[in-house]
Length: 408
Image (cartoon, rainbow, N blue to C red):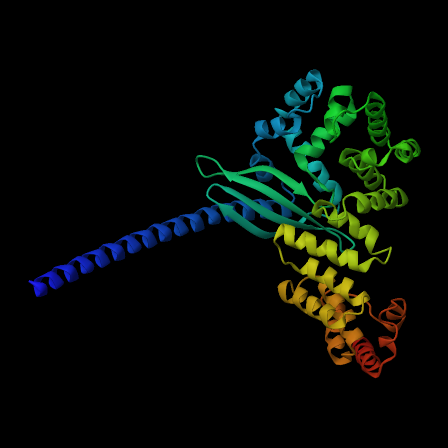
């Protein structure tokens, strides 16, 4: 009897084990299927964005604009902002024309990229039918903008652009456009909704309205006159800072821009959306640690690791005397993007600072041949970080060899 009982117990345990194994196998199969489906959907997102980027680089906004849900975007822009109904109606009517909508969307991009758009898709992430993508737009003078796109797939798995965060201008597209309409014709109720604290006094609303109108009219004397009289809780209002900063950028008023960036640094020092703008204040002001921190915040927020950011991190660490880190960032930059001129300048300066003259010569070769730079003694002597290098035997030998080659 005891033996029979043991055999029965063993069979029961074996059955349970088999059932448990089958449940695990079924669960693993389910997970595998989900992972395969997620990978498939992510590829749909990636292919859609890659096609849009390809078109942008050819100067076309057709696919980009077609991917935007026009009605949803207009609803986001107007939202609960209490914008005059007549203005809303007229604008919606205008936007029904495809050319008008395309021009409205593309104007900012075209203004920033007068020499042509150079867009680079950095990352695509997705979960189910929701996703995001980050595109870097390279501009002149080694400047770059990063735009983080919120995406979805419709019922036919077509890519839809929902909205986007623009890190050069420091705002979400629909939010800034909505603010533009409030700014164009401000009213008490719409302006009250812009202010982020309760029990706003009428006098405060009037001050904000006047500041919005002054920035709208590029009347900087009046804008800063109003701004100087505001108390801290009004000075820190995002709407007031954004309209002033945007107007200063558009008018290319560097001093005005600096004044406002000082305020942004005071009130929003850790906001990633302002990180790119703040670099224009931190670097000239020699606040290199703050510049490094801003770049790191941007990198972490966007979840990207690209050549431009690493070249800038190299510049920040180099001026702080962290030569090894600067060299590591610079080398990483050109490994990621061998065609990136900014990366090769970072490598050259870091190699020179490290005393690696032979390696620096290789960077000179790339900059002179690939990017057609005249790197003679006169040119290098104008660069404080390179003028001592121009006196070294390695550099003189390189220059003499190139000069002889040019003559031959």
